[in-house]
Amino acid sequence: MTAESPIKFELVDINAILRTLPHRFPMLLIDRVINIRADYSGIGIKNVTFNEPAFQGHFPERPVYPGVMMIEAMAQTAGVIGITSVEGTEKPRAVYFLTIDKCKFRKPVLPGDTIEYHMRSIGRRKAMWWFHGDAKVNGQVVAEADVGAMLTD
Image (tube, rainbow, N blue to C red; front, side):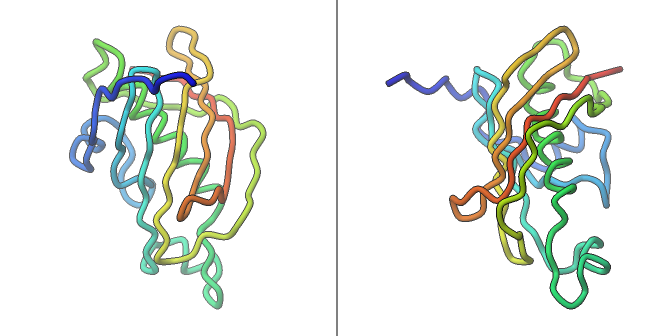
């Protein structure tokens, strides 16, 4: 059994995320990132609340957190991992999607749930990164995808 990679950053709180990513309300979709490891893996955390703008239309009678927002949150988590892990990337940068592959939605996410975005790097070339993500609620996978992104100035 292989040992886990050492933790480089135990916690990236909301203030550090705001300094790292250009996203703002209502498009900032993670509350914190924990356990960023030397192998470019980590966990993004999202506390889903009923007063989120998406629930006004998705769906008012039976609120379900939109899957597309989970995929965006995976990319944001990957962006925080990439930007904070690499030397010389302290300034705010834009993170643009390149690809979304092997995306599956397994279970609905409801208000009151806490989503954990378990992200791990599966490739990197210059400013381009690819990550695999598993979105989990109470330890169960609710969505998964491979996402690719590019960091720019």
